[in-house]
Image 1 (cartoon, helix red, strand yellow):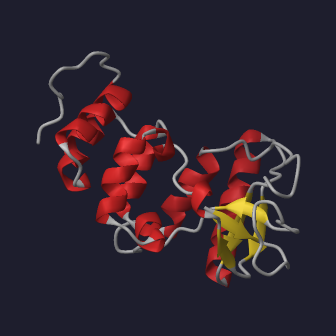
Image 2 (cartoon, helix red, strand yellow):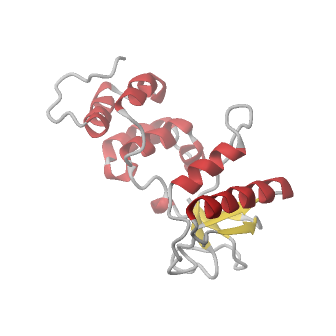
Length: 184
C-alpha cells in the first residue's frame, strides 16, 4: 500500500497532496503476465464508476509504452463489451511512496496473533510488506482465496497450527473447528 500519481514529495495519509492511494506490484513475467494482472485489476472494480476523490481514484500506472498500450486495449475492450465509458485512469508511473506502517496489510491487522508470528519471521517492515507469505495470508483474511487454495498453500505460509486453524475458520467458514481441515 502506498501513494502514487502526484507531485508532492514524501506524501503521508494525513498530507497526501495530489497522490492516489494505490498498491505497487512486483511480478515475474515468467509466472504471470502483465495482461493477466490487468485482467484481475479490471475485474476487481467497477471501471465505469466515477471516483469521488483523487485519493481513491481508480487508476493503472504504466511503466512503459507496452504497458500503456495493453492497458488501453483492455480498457477499450471493456467499453466495447459493456457499452459503458470507462472512468478508470491510465497514467504514467512517476514514483511510488510506501504508506505508513499502520496502512499495511489491513485485513491481517485484525488478527494480531498472526501478525505477531509473521513479524517474528519478517521483523523489518520492508521485508514484512514484500513477503509473499504475508501478502497471501492478508489476502486470505481479506476474503480472497478459496478453502481449496488455502489447503494447497498452508504449509508454505510458515505459520503455526493455531494460525492455520484461524485461517481455516475464516476462509473455509467452519465455525468451531477443533482440528484444521488444512493438511500440514
